[in-house]
Image (cartoon, rainbow, N blue to C red; front, top):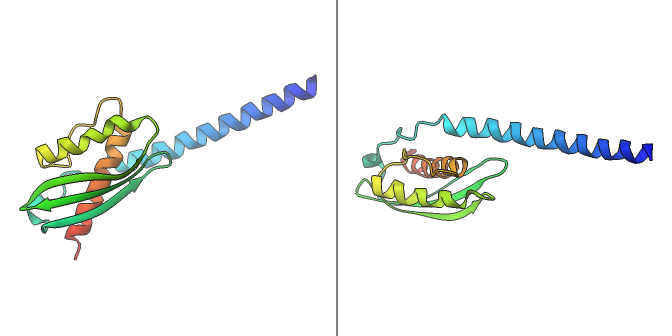
Length: 131
């Protein structure tokens, strides 16, 4: 009986360590993405075209296709969004297009996915203006 208790406690401990590690890595990745300046690109300098971008954390993966025309965000299509319960964040693309800005409020209840989507859009726009 004592051996079973030790095995159970070991499994619980290993699970707790794994969960803590996942949380720490994800927190660090999210902090780095959140620190980005989502206003750093002047959309009027982005050539017309369609650009792809992606951003990931340990738990969230996003790939987008961003269409720019006449210095405006025309469309933002989510090619891939793996996020668990962050589905609600997908509407942030509509806000970005409507406001012609990547720097919009995160979707309530899905802020982590919102930030990763914004980061993917920024990556696409940065690729567009890179020489």
